[in-house]
Length: 505
Image (cartoon, rainbow, N blue to C red; front, side):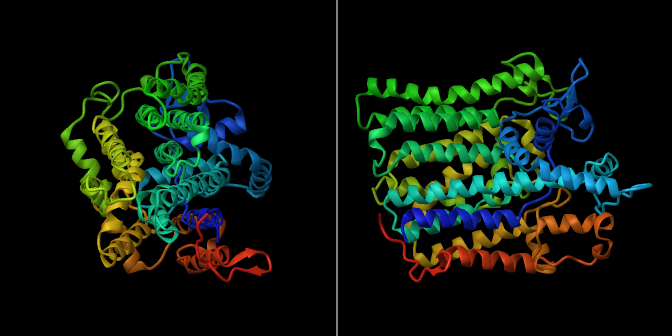
């Protein structure tokens, strides 16, 4: 099997896994998707009061306090399927008569109130479709794409095909990107765009040596998209720009490398202009970020809208808080801190500069978010803000995993995938105090899926016979296993793949 064929199958495999584990959480980014596609506006007036980040300006219009990038991109598949969604929604609403029940069997009052308001306004079916479409047709393929790119990059860096594939699978299934892919989220989008941009610039093996300017342009575009998704993307954009100069200087004089980096800057211009247009259209000022216009909320009284100088307490929470700390959600990533010990002795497939850059990005994001007071709110939905550090810290961790004894690597990898899978099946709830709680629920209650749990909570409105019956996740997981087997065993319809060995290009 060629590396290209493996990459495609890896992409389809992870897309399938992510799709079946999607969660139905409906966040602020979803409201903007609906508003842009259904109403052709950035304003969120009908949804004021349904999310804490949606606020009203003095002119009476309502918006949310985040960048629009991930909503703009996720709106594409929803717009494509809108005729189908409209048909189903209209049929369902036409069949409703009399008083509409809105029972959501959940101990959290905020979620009960959200469902009640959505149901009473006739938005429940549409919101459900939007959460499914944006997760299954945007977030899932986006993260799967990053894993496929990582596989090709690891193979080009010198890893044997099977090890490169294994590394990409561990990244996709054993790190918090699995957990966070479940629903629309801008922090994961920043992580994906930053990782792919780095892989394009790094280009181990120099396969694109004759297209450096094009690669700079592509990486700049991805860096710009990261910024369009969230202002934390500026960290990745700036560091990637510096790396572009360093990487190009391997081949040409420094002055030429700096000139060529203008292609990187050119790539970022488009997304930045889109961001400026959004801010001008929504808030009347193209420079000030959405957060500038938000009314006072929890923690916003500190610094500039909740952004202060780096704080040691927040730095520690980002890494070790039992509910969302990076080294709690993925303990094996701490091994990445040992990577410089091997790179200094040239006993690794990743050069010292690239490992150093990966660790620098991870450190930069940890320091950056240690200055953002809102990171304290991650207990509500689990690890989120520090996600852009995950792919880069994983690259450093891969160096260590390849050097330690294989049996230790196998134990670490198996434990990491199992732990992450448990978190993705039984997602942490805000009243729980540790990421061990989802693991405990899986052990005691069995395999489960977030979407099925949500459906069971509201089944009284749609399938009363299923209410309280405990919808089993086993059939869906078995279907997933069969689908994955077919992905790897069938090359073309009617032609079995007898040899799954990964051949070099």
